[in-house]
Image 1 (cartoon, rainbow, N blue to C red):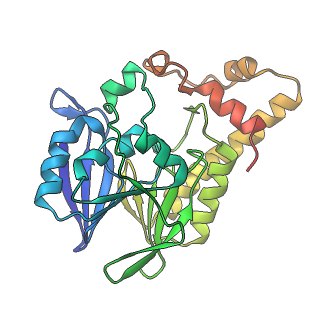
Image 2 (image 1 turned 60 degrees about the horizontal axis):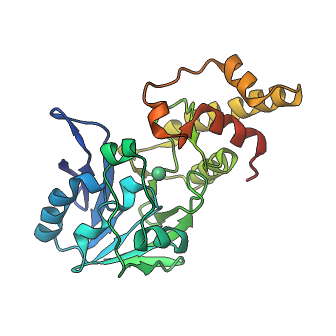
Length: 268
Ligand SMILES: [Zn+2]
């Protein structure tokens, strides 16, 4: 399913999701600005994305990272548009990785886009605006955001977690690095954060600060427990974070233990 919303005069929010009844399981946002689209939406909305691409003149698609909800829609925009991705992400765009059944249901499968090209990681020009390409890795081993210092707009994808209290993570998320990236975003004094799952957030300072605070405090607590000799399963028991029903269906892609391990072991 797809929903289109406008943000001001310039930005079109292209929301895609898989339906559950008449509701979305979870929205993911792509954004169109001029003839450029940031991120491509999910594979389960491919027909709607194809119709969207046909009706709007999209010339370039820039994807931020290789998760299926951000690259699954790439194929809908070719051959009319060029698709660009960072070098790591490009590998998955060219040759998709297999997805557990649960994620095929939630977001849809990946289709290879062999003509996708590597992103110029210095800057990109969209109409009158020049966007700096910024390193937002942490949520994913490679993730780029797009920053317009004039308007102080940041297309941030998944750099800022959706929940105010992030209590689980993907197996390869680097949480100390994610905290560092959020602090760097705070220093940029962002006016509008174009978030990958929440949509545009005006004046995002407090929104981001809440998430930094929670994860930073959790890191202190978890590392103290580890220093006392507690194992990851023991720390998990102490924290008592509720396990969502679908966690086993993610086949270890998500876990509370991944978050704990990252806070103990990962370096920025
Ligand atoms: Zn992601």
